[in-house]
Length: 89
Image 1 (cartoon, rainbow, N blue to C red):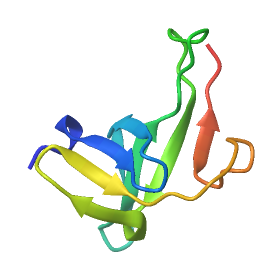
Image 2 (image 1 turned 180 degrees about the vertical axis):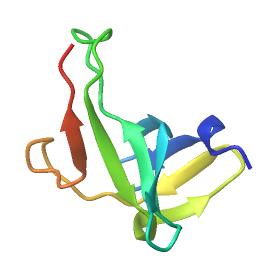
Image 3 (image 1 turned 30 degrees about the vertical axis):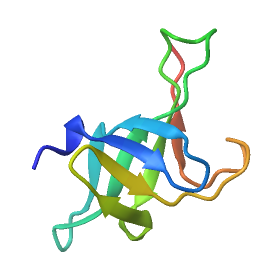
Image 4 (image 1 turned 45 degrees about the horizontal axis):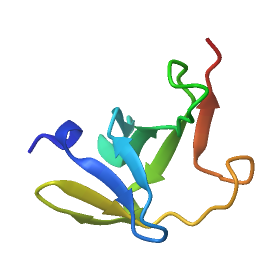
């Protein structure tokens, strides 16, 4: 199964989060702990990469043929606990 081809969609607000860019692993036991998707891009920062979002495995609702449905609650990006980094170019 090719996960990078599937689009990640938040079932809470219907927002498309993009395609998976990485998978997080627990190196001590070799288990997958979650997925990482790119941060939001706005009109003004199309060419800049933003923050990356970590989605824990327990918040993945369904893996379908075309999409991965996740359940992410969060307000503004500053209040979102799933932001991994804020890359500056």
